[in-house]
Length: 428
Image 1 (cartoon, helix red, strand yellow):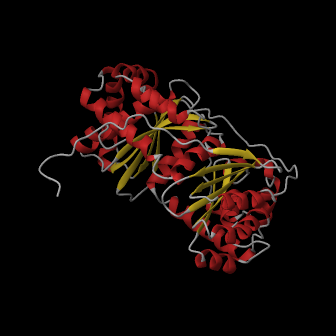
Image 2: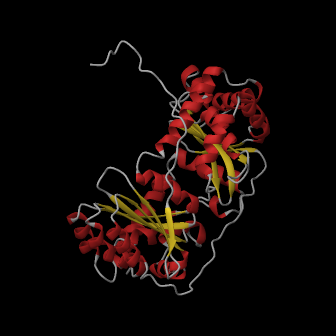
Image 3: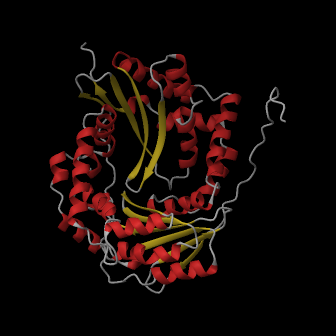
C-alpha cells in the first residue's frame, strides 16, 4: 500500500516524441494519413473535405449539410445507417467548422470494413432528405433563439465584431429568420462544389492491420476527382479601434465580459512564447487572472485567457462572467494584471507551475493514436506548422520570465483592449 502521508515524487516529462504519420497520395488525388499503434482494439477514420461555414453565404448551409451527411445516402436511409452503426458498436459523426467539413467513423478494426461502403456513400452520395433537413433546421432556429438569450453568447458575438472587424463575415450575428431561410438546394449546391478527391484528406489511426489499411485506401480511391474546385474564402481580420461595447440584457443575473487584443499568427517566431505568456496570464487554474480575480477578489467562478490562431489572423481573448455589480471592478483587475505581466516577472514558483502545465498539455497529445492524429488534422484544418509540436518543446525549454515580460509589453497592452459586456448593468 502506498504511504499516503508522503507526497509522490514529481519528475519532469523529459523530451517528448510524436510518432510520425505515414502519408500517401492516392491515384485520384486524395491524401491519406495513417498512424498505426495503441493498445486498444479501436480504429478511427476521418474524411476531411475543404469547405465549411466560412466558405458559404450562410454558415448554416455548411453546418446543416454536415449533419445531413449521416441522414441518408444512395446506399441506405437514415434508419438503416443508424442500425448498421449500432449493430457494429460504432460511432459515426460529422461536423463543419471553419473552412472544413469532417465525416468521422470510430469502430473496432474488424468492423470498419463492413461500415466503409455506407460511410463512403454518405460522403459522396448524400441524399439530404427533406424530413431530417426540416428537423435539423428547426433545431438550428431554436438553438439560435436560446443563444440570443444568453449573455455569454451575446458578449462573445459582439466581441467578434470588435476584434475581427465590423464587416468581417465572422462578425455577423445570424437571426433565427436567416437560419430558417436556408434551403436544401443551397446545401446540395455547396456540397457539389467541393466534392473532389483532390480536395480531401483522410486520417486513419488506431490498431490497424495491413488488410484494413488497404481496404480503406481502396474505398477512398473510389471518390471522384471531377475538378469541381471552389477556393476557400479567407478574409483577414481587421480589428476595430479599442472600445468598450455594452449589450443590455434586462433581467440577467450575471454579466458576461469578453476582452480581446490583436495578436500574431502561428507562423510568427514568437507565437509559441506568446502562447505560454497568455497561459501564465489566464490559461490554467494557477494563472494570475485566476489567482487574483477568482481566488483573491471572488468576482467570478472562473476566468480564462487564450491565444487563438486562425487562417484569418490571431488574437488574444479573455472571458469571464460575474455579478452585474462587479463588472467594472473585474475589468479594472484585468487591466492591472496585463500591466503586471509586463512589469513583474514570474516568480520561480510561477515558472515551475507554468512549465508543468504546458508540458502536461504537450504530453496529453501522446495519450492515444486518436489524440496524436488530432494533432495532424490540425495541421490542415487550423494551419499549425508541421514542426509545431517540437517547436513548443523548444520554447518550453528556453522561455524565461524576462521573455514573458518582453512579450507582455509588446502584446498585452491594456489600452488596446476591445471590451464587450452583456448583462443587466446598474445605472450610473
